Image 1 (cartoon, rainbow, N blue to C red):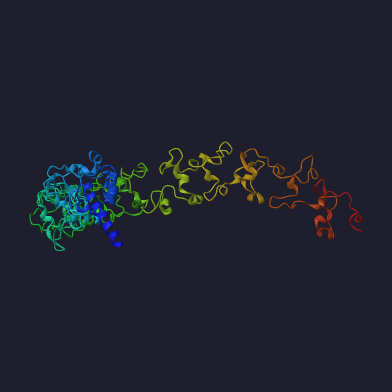
Image 2: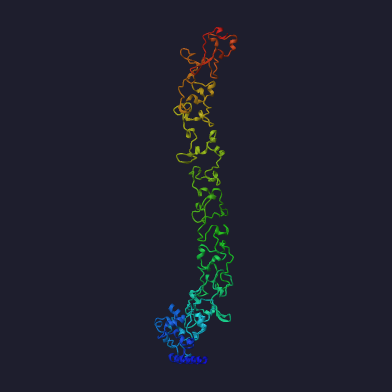
Length: 612
């Protein structure tokens, strides 16, 4: 039974094999051989239909990915619409190459990567090799055209060994690797100018070996200073970089007039020095080691090293104390200038005077300083001139104190026509010598009479008999106006005696207002000589005779005491002890209506009237 089943099964299999051979058009290619068999037909075919693109792309996902990205040959509009089997038919046997096309006439532009220059003549298999495929799965496939990228370094070795950008087309084109026709040296950090334009690249970019490979240096090259590439013919004797004096056009030409930073030397250029031609100070030479090496170590302030000293050494060698570099005639404030080195050392007030006050023109112009009036106006307008010659101001004034202070002494004043005496010695000078009319000091034609300076307050009050020609000295002295010691009152009709000799003249001859101040109301004539005309009559009419009280009957001018009074002439002559009694014991005082009243006339003379 078992052997019968085996024969039946074998017969069935043989019939299937014969049937498949009649259905299949042929063997699949090597790439699809795992899909052989009736059970796998639907992997590629729909039942009763042709091979569908969707079936292909289910397996060939790398193609589907490119189509989705719209990249590569299969994504082109004219290609993506075609059936895959038109180009990639199968069932032609194991050795059939499914990727078949006319390589010579293939339009590579349809892949999205245009072939240019040398790429146009390169055999396809020079580029489409596994070594140039990045995807490891695609790399395993034989004779595939997939998996290449557009970066140059995916196919070419990096000649620059990561020292430059990976974007090779920035410098190179597709015709040849050399020269780098797309490279513009002006885009580099070191733009080529002048003679540098004609220099071969190899002169600066040396060829060498790096990591066992040919290599040319394009980065890391020092170019900040010319001496990085060129020898310094000046042997480091000149500061700064070469470009300060030279240009790339010709090294033998000098362009440093406006470019060289002279401040890098020990001599800073300022003012006019900036515009001076270099060879005005330095000798011309074609010897590099001697160029500008003369005049070294000359101090900036040692001007006479180059300029003539017009002052002939009188003011020292430091011209910068007075002069500026902008112009030799432009003078500073010269506050530090030592005027003592001149023929006229400054003293006192002159130290504070601005230079231009004296030096109206150039500072080198000579100034006549033989006398003060050579610079100063004669304030006194010739008042002190003798024989048309005025004395120098220094005879009365000093530089230390100025013109407001006078050295003229009291002793000198005593030698004049008006020697000072008494109160005049203490009188300030301006009181006499400042003219209100002229509003200035004056010292001539002042007059020597009192009334030339003082007001005559007695005019029209005192007779000229007592002070002829308004001669105040007839009464007054220089010590004080209030002292009258030279007037003889006996020349009047009322001689002074006793206490009257000590009375101030004003007490009798001047009236006083309510403020006890003289109002210049004077009386020197027709004055009443009666005592009561000046003195208060304290007795009123007690001692009046025929209505007149004559004080002289009792009093004298030397004292108020009644020295002329004789008690014996009264109704009560004094006798005995009464002569010794104080007057006030009998002549008592009392206050009536706020005033003190003394009782002089007694009407009772009996003893009992006074004695108990």
